[in-house]
Image (cartoon, rainbow, N blue to C red; front, side, top):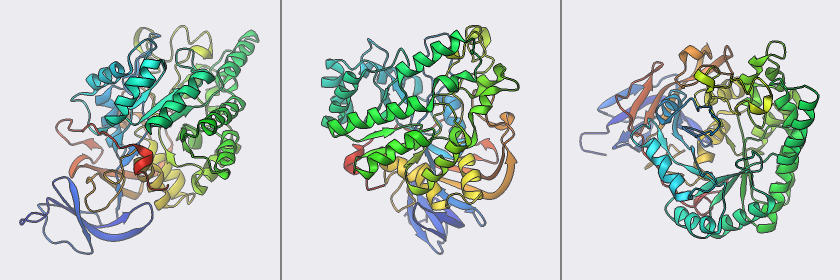
Length: 477
């Protein structure tokens, strides 16, 4: 701390961590937390946080931005709009994906993604990679070099024609991950089962958006989750099962945990706030396309199971899987395009959610007594930082950590409204849902970047974060 005192003092708020809560002042100098005490004198800038919660900034560890689609549709958020939306929702770090197209160098995919992000990030960012073409060159040379440089996690897909890996490829990728100390994220849905169900549904003329949920049945997710876990057990490598939607895949994860396997799990807002019935629209009409994502929302029993998993530790992290498309894009660029009108299988998969992730979990979880404040912090900030090699620089309110802080008004009640959001999409699937508990101020490296419903930072100053090897630096979650 300088002789003139701290740059910023946040006074009188209730500081909440993943394990504790207490009323105290917090001081920041040069973008770092330098003091936490009952009373701190001075401060070039002072914020009265009486009646507010002082939380570590949210870390959304599963976000898709500026991702090429290849089918004429356009992702609704680039890095500028996506990260602006993130900070408006109380997040200070987002983790998007650098997608390798088949035939493309993995390093080139990372370089291309950096070019898209350069100078446009309002929050801090760090990339996962997506591997779709695991050639000997990629697994033997490019991946090891990128992991050493701080790109320490990547995602693989068990479905989608242009991204699916077969079992032999998955085993090779898992083996490379074990060798290099990287962390694999798995999209677990059975590709052949989905294609089989899609064909059967189309033959019966069942092509409305709702039938996306039927094609992407929970059985296919359960089977793929078990298969991914089995491959990981064979190779002896930790994995993260992402966007878990319901009870059946959860039971596979719990089975693995009981046997001491290193299987981590993520779930998302759509699985606590939506059900498959939302895909029916007004009367099995095309409005249901607004809710098409994979895996799709399930039934009320699965919602109850997800909440239990959020409480009991089955889930380590809660991410948005923000994958925004326009509903009515120009010239066929949105969900409502001519080909999508012919069958659910052509509806772009994904919904916007980076800005509403934290308010939804706070309102449905904390405000309704389903989870504690401490658990909220763990799921949305501390655990993602630990899992992906950012802790304790991020995800913690401790001396020396980055001063990434979100102030929350736990009593503020207002509906989610598209007109108030900052993302690029032209709709939100959570329109009109009443929320109790909102982020009111987002502080990145000691600078207020969002306040009073508005972005107040004059320019994008977010940084790119290189990360340590997750499983070498991660304390137990």
